[in-house]
Image 1 (spheres, rainbow over the protein chains, first blue to last red):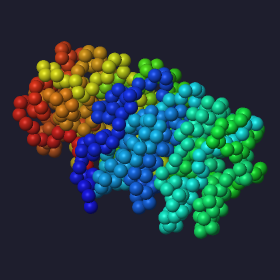
Image 2 (cartoon, each protein chain N blue to C red):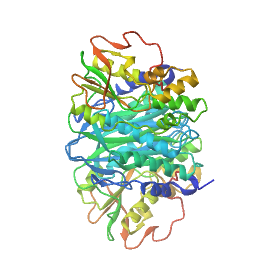
Image 3 (cartoon, each protein chain N blue to C red):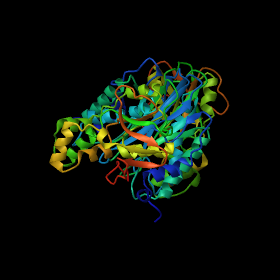
Length: 310
Length: 310
């Protein structure tokens, strides 16, 4: 057993973690004071926040500290991506069991910083406190270079499109839930999502009318767009390319790979609607019409549509 | 037993809470999308984050949901106050036990919104998830109208000064810890701190060289200024007016009221150093000199200096 969080103490831990957080040029005051100060030349800030709880969102025997760090950063960066923006700053607040090894926490911080670096974001502050299980609460700040793409702008006649991997993380979770560690590609996708960070700003520039990231499930997120926009959306199941490893999971578990794709979350792929041609990297998966609700191949869908939080 | 969080579900709960959050004119996109969008005309944003965990920072049998809401907002607004700024936006992320009553959570949201309204801040977003105990993670955004006042600017010859109540909340906590509910003034001070929100910007305008809010303890926070500024600070114990109810606590518990003031936190009073005259509402409590460390009346202090997180 290595050094624990209680051995090192709050201030020692903060010093160790902040070493891992390099600061971008926009950061005037970084971690270490009552608050940070960040330049926002665009005259606005796009902001979001998320919380992950051990035992609910991750298990320490399934994922490494670095994976939790990557995932916590990714799901927040993805929220800015889904507005058509790019994140520039993150805060990281941690609840930690006193007997947790310091190495696990520094791994988390390293993973968090690595993910933030993918979009050039800085970790500007946060908080550390004790808790009975690991809690990771993140807030993110970013900017858009045009009007933000909301959930509410889809119009009849638009095409529903997808960017990024979809169903991979859910396949990995299904595998882990059955006590297996392969197919490795899917397990890795669950441990470290790879959100399509370029696709959000690209969609905004291409005139996307609505956008959302798939964190809970593809159909439930599609439902959010349909509801916020006051439209009906039909998803075409033949549009999805089923990745090879999902076939293997289906064979081993008896699950339908399409069910995993339609109900799965955690990949932080993007869903958007476009009135015209799709930008490169986006795949048409459905159509927007007058009405309400989400259908699959023109019919109601009775499989799982997404993760339920309670 | 009323309706529980699990009865209502995530989306019902979010709808119920966001009703309580009115949005200021600076909020272009409020809660309900992937992220919020806020105008920041000043060209910068001051940001901080904090986490409170049930059983560690509060007990549900000691404080009401509304108190937890007030306190969670107050400690974050206070971080912006301590930079000499004013908060304009907050995010609220909640981890909630599924069997928690919805009324407790709506009370929390109401208290949070009321505290935010004291400085004109809007609750622009957040997250809700299940957790074994209540976790409240907040992030705050604000602005300063001059350079932020850091911890690192104290200079030899400066006067150390205090604004706001100090020791009241710690007195209330001592009372609750012994199973009592009075003196009521102190218990209320613990349940709902009243940070001196006007004093931060006022100190900045008056040329404060350093500033910090007292969340963990007066002497430990003084130590942060001394260390960050590379100076020695002597605190003069006779400078503190001991509030009447603290004498009562001292009599009942055998504690020295001065010990409660010097080691107590949670009031979110402000400590600042000034090279010249103090603004109104600030009380001189010590002096800055060359050297390092914190002394009380010229001698080392061996009592408790502040809250330890592990």
